[in-house]
Image (cartoon, rainbow, N blue to C red; front, side):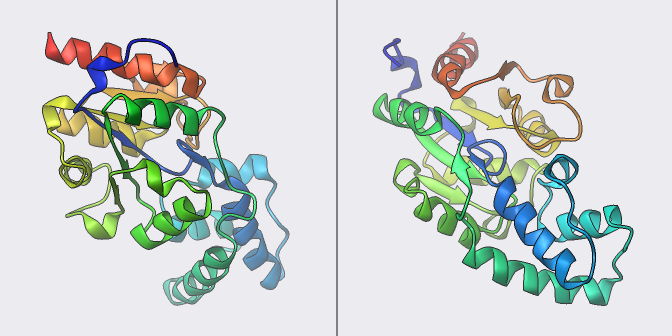
Length: 233
């Protein structure tokens, strides 16, 4: 983190949350499996359930029960969704942890003058509760869930709302994510895109054509410097 990061001053770095900043799969899949068990169904192994994350709790329930050969009707989905949220809220950070190097990279970029924002399809209250539990809220200038934006990712208005909430400008912003929703929002907004290789995505991140693909957060600050330098040029 000793590299020159002066180019980050005043820029907004916008992050997805689940699968990008925080490995939330243990608690999300854990909650899904609790509900499957209560319904008399076998739990899903992590390897099978992990790629189902990233499109919200309703989609996780739909896809999870479908994978368990018990597709959900709308009325049953609504009742299970309420149970999912209640259980998950109480266990939101039992095992969820920031990915290695995330806190250090965020700290370095913030100290260099970057504004940091979260742009997530996780509801804002759940996002702030998770970040509070992990002592990460202090690192961000804004946290914007779909309920705090005109539309959810991949709609570019979600990304744009996060940039504005952090007090920045679109022409000096970068999206950091892990999946197609992040790529879609960034591309539609005309923003540079960094994807992580370790997130939750059915389509490998490398196939989503990021400007830069990183394997560890140690690479992130300089990746942002490179993209912002290209924007300035």
